Length: 205
Image (tube, rainbow, N blue to C red):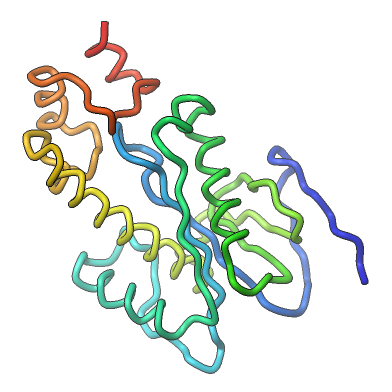
């Protein structure tokens, strides 16, 4: 039985040739001014291929919704996790994103032998891991994770809109559009807003 290996967050990307289950991991919501950051982890089933997996940002909302259901139905297992607005403000957005990724991997029903993470930083894991820049366009499991994270967060934004309709979360998804900034100036910040982000600091002065 090989010993567990821990790789700190700042370790450069490593390539592993390890047989067994492979999980793809990606996030959604690093840039917005409001709402949690979401991460997903997916272990695909080679016997149930899914056509059309791609970077979620390059798919239409309708296509993402269809693939969301297909991924959930056909994958060996998946997990969706988040880091809250309060954690984002306390830790910073990078560390909160890595925390959400760690939670997503730990939430998998099956433990993978290897984890492939989109980007150039790794969360704290006790599993062999590799960071892949633009992995959501290169690795099917990461593409699937990006779709789960994006659709889940978009649905959260719809709920945020129901709670605070004057902010238009259903349209801008929390990003700092002019309409969002205008709403912040008019109505102030909500409990959903990331107060550590620069545009919020101007509103809260």
